[in-house]
Length: 319
Image (cartoon, rainbow, N blue to C red; front, side):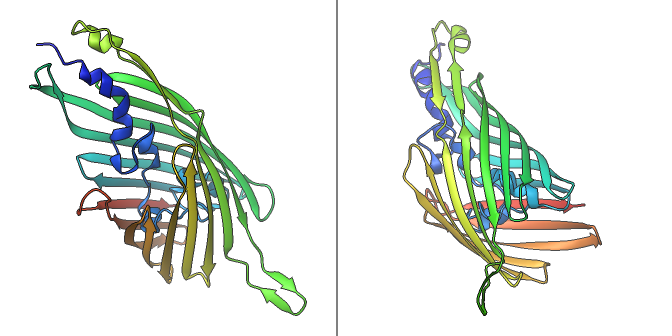
């Protein structure tokens, strides 16, 4: 029995609908928060960006990372959605950093139906993002970074590919002396980034629907460029507060805010707000040697579409 032809009509929409909490436009999966620490902080991470998730929030952050970091994260979302990443960041001569990462997202239980509405199987919907990050310090306080990204999107065996770029900057303040007064600005950082530059996904469904006697269609979705501006302040190496504003070319601006309390660089407690939704979490860091450590982070984020919320886990090795 032939597949119904309302399916090709919805094919271009599935990438945006897949992650409905930030949907409406292509590339919604790219705006889902990555990394348990950053998500627990309400995704206010543009100025901080100092761990394995740094390239996802600010490509310039890797310039300040002084240890090699390998990190992995897994996020369970509702409606059978999955999201995770692997990341490797390598410092270069204490003035630059390079990173490699892979982000995978998928949606299950999408039912394919025929022209009278009867189920005929499941449609696959997944996305892979492969990225290269480079960041460099140009002064003792200022860095610039960039990501080169290859994006692959597959919906119902129809594939689309795109090359895209991210750019970012980060500035670290020093204490400012005014006469006999010193302003304690050390610990204050600011960051800015622009994401998904030139990202376009072109879907050609003719081959898929040709199996069933259909013609298919050609659709190109432009992923909106996303801008982030943030500031953070670390007080006495214990208390971190952060604030971000985010705006893309298709949606209104919104804020992220979060805070973190550290105890002896071993235990961290975090809370934040993003899109009006609360988040919280904790992290434990265990030194393995003078130069090695492992960190486990957890985050919970309330969901705007149900009462269950999302759970994130991240594991990071420093070596």
